[in-house]
Amino acid sequence: MADTRPDLVADALTRLGADRAEARAAHRRWQSLRHAPRGPRGLSLHTAVLGPPARRDEARTGDLTLAVHRWPLPLWPHLLWEVLADPGGSVLAEQLVRAPGSPVPPASAGLLVWEHVVADVAALPGAAGVDPGVPPRWEVRLPDGTRAAFVWGLLQQVHAPA
Image 1: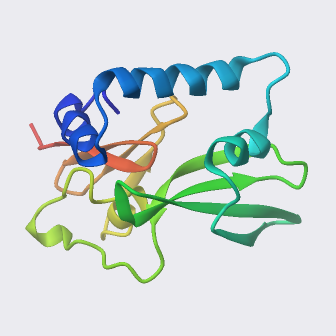
Image 2: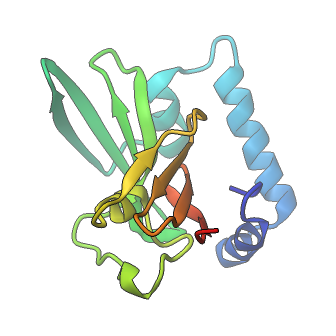
């Protein structure tokens, strides 16, 4: 997210009591684990890093039953990190989602960066999701021409109609 919102990332590091060096070190550890030849894969990678999920549910898609794993994150107490995995543990999708029972910020006053998630904006009348072809990114276009850009399911930028 630092490539789209370095200002918010800097504020988040302060709130978490971390600095840029610690953030870079954590990112290096994540990438090292993720790309290690003998490192954990799929859902095992997430549990190795995040621990056991706080919540596990199932979702059916046609004949396939998917495991839905969710972890709370200290930076966003109203959101959860969600991982959809197939029965073999392969990760099919991962993103931030709204925690059950948490209020959705009203979009009528404007979309709120780092507050709205894809599902919040996609639920607006006439909204259309657009896959930009980059796995952690998503875009939702509104009828008035507004474009909402997301990274890992969290709103990063709002582009007003030209």
